Length: 191
Image (cartoon, rainbow, N blue to C red; front, side):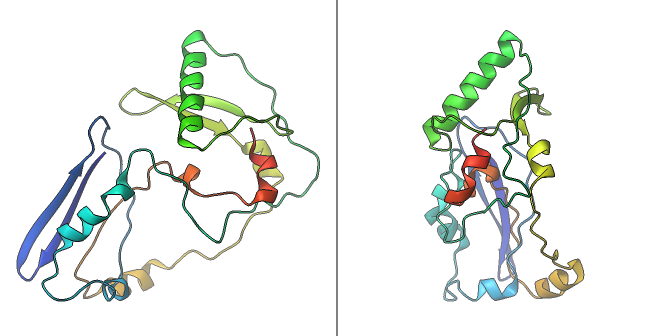
């Protein structure tokens, strides 16, 4: 992963780069620290590069599950398990799937199970030609009660950014796997 963060200290523009060996660059989704978040940073002789180096493990290419008191809870409209008929895979696709499952198991994202629910994995090619394993959760999504939260307004966010000293843009690597499921929801997601 290649990450570049530009920041200003006084009139000086500085750049912090982190390149993790053996990983490819990725598209960065924007994450902005608003002015109120900067208040928690030390003010005397602020050196952002030292702060970023102290949290370098957060950019590990094999992130762990986030520790949170608020695991995600799947709420379904039915007690009937959802099954998708498995599709055929080429030998290359089968090998890719095996490697992916081993990677998930090794990282602690997967464990052996006998699921009551199933969903088809698919293999799509990224822009660089490498395979990405995705899961077709559309059948499960059809019976999932959606969480309805209003999205933040862009004009309010832009107003909060006025006068900010630091702007960062980051990508959460494998974000889907970093959000823990509530114990009551694990059964529905064991596909």
